[in-house]
Image 1 (cartoon, rainbow, N blue to C red):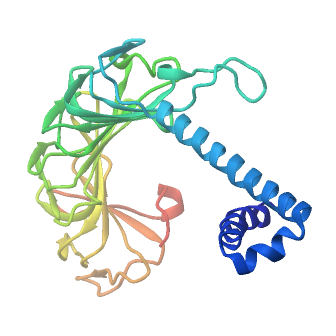
Image 2 (spheres, rainbow, N blue to C red):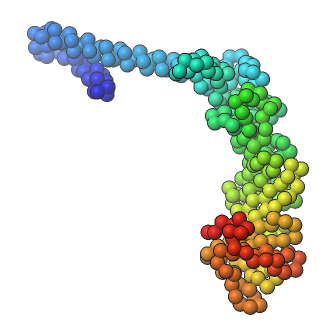
Image 3 (cartoon, rainbow, N blue to C red):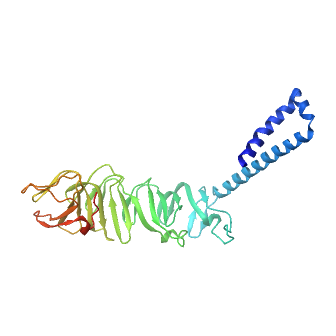
Length: 312
């Protein structure tokens, strides 16, 4: 019904005006002034109210997306002059009549005309769409929380509702590493990512197109876990090349992990052709094998379910 009225109003009004301007059509219309008047009133009302609503919405969008003509301090967050700011709401009360964060304090994102420092990090844009994370677009390569993060990529920070306007209390969450970053004694390709998970960090190359060598083994889909001092705890990935350890030969794509120093755990998928070179036998389906890396001796062979390995 709403769209029908809009169509009648926006089509009917110009048609009516055109008909009134043409003598041959005007005379029949003027024989029914009340009907024409009622039709004109409906059309003008629909067009007028719709235009007013559009103007109000446009004005509200302008107010919710201002460009600052001077620097503004919002809590402990500084927004510089020239910043394009996007606010959640201008209303002090929510739909239930309860007080809510509004105005500049409800900032959701901002773009800066020049690199701007937030918590000592040079950025060109800020996003706070979905807490508990804020995102900062890095203006150039920078070291954040001890990690070399690539410029032009989004740095993620852990933020709470309480700290959203206190950048100094934000905590590193994730970033894209600089190409060639040296971490855990290995070189990481472009698009590698590092994530903070509690008191540990995980480096992953799942978005990178190049394999990574971890302790001399070339891998793809690598995930390396580090402690707070950036020391290696464990790693896992898939073999980029076939590998022989002791009597066992493992194909390309084989899952391999190191959860304790000096050992390697191999977990074949259904398509992996694992073979013992001495006996010629394969590994049981959905089983993993742990070997000592130095001499290849087998420490155990267990079902995947016992060692928290997913079957695939």
